[in-house]
Image: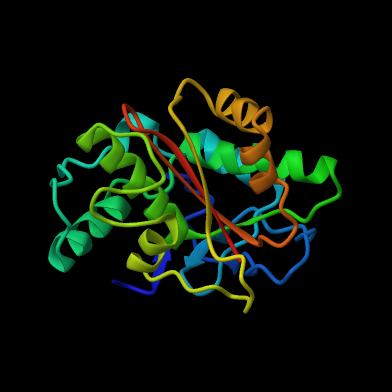
Length: 223
């Protein structure tokens, strides 16, 4: 799998050559970026977006209906070749969609209320999250434990995720059956003690979101 990808969101101003948005460095990015920027997302360097940038990206990113993979997740462990094909299609369909970007923005707003740092968008965790929502849809189950792909951490590692901090927090996962709206998903999570605790965990630094109609919403929190 490629280690370097460009977020394809259909926003002309974003996809032109220019300055790069800096990778997450443990603090909120407050710089005023030029109108023409290239937003590059790397697996090894999750990217911090400002609230305004997330809003702009969500307004022009692919719709949830446009990013549903044509591949059917088999009722067995996926092969390396199938995983590569699925990952390539993820980017060919536009990568992170508008719904997912808005969930990230709303979660960071909730964290800001409690004085917590925002979470950087991690493409590896986003792919792993989308894959989990996809397999829940295709295999008709709703659980953090996959029939063939183990735990949340197992699936993150399957896509190449490695923690950028050495501690025991690993990967935490929230799932929701709803795809009605990003607002509804975050509202439900914030009103559930366990899901709320994951959103407001100060040790997490990155986030990945994956939404598939019929499979719900998956959020992965990484460190």
